Amino acid sequence: MEIISKLYEMTAIGELKLWDLTSMKESVTLPGHPRGILDLAFSPDGKMLVSGGIDSAVKIWDVSTRRQITSLTNFTGPIFSLAFAPGGRILATAGGYPHSLSAEIKFWEVPGFKELSLFLFMRPPL
Image 1 (cartoon, rainbow, N blue to C red):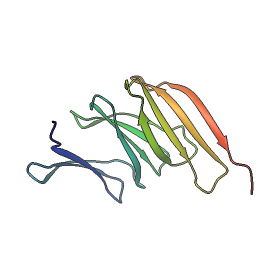
Image 2 (cartoon, rainbow, N blue to C red; image 1 turned 180 degrees about the vertical axis):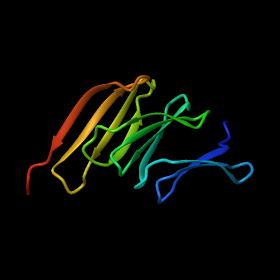
Image 3 (cartoon, one colour; image 1 turned 90 degrees about the horizontal axis):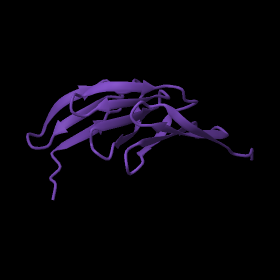
Image 4 (cartoon, one colour; image 1 turned 60 degrees about the horizontal axis):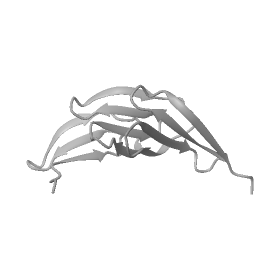
């Protein structure tokens, strides 16, 4: 059984904090998203951490170096859900404004983060 020794925290001001649970000390703070983080996802191999924010951006982090690999910014609203496919070769992002009539789901190639497809969902007006 693997023992979890690290924890990532999303702060109210949009930072990502890494805590070492053995020492119970914060080991690093990453700049994250200036307006807040809505979701995090680890790649299946645990090498990448992806964050989605209110700022309509997705940031991809290298877990071992704690450096940002890239940022994806071509979204129409906040990113509220992130997920890797089981093999880790595709990243799904979902975003939009809850009060709007549309949302988008994008699929990205990993590595390289080339956009593979886009699905737009339009809710009919009430």
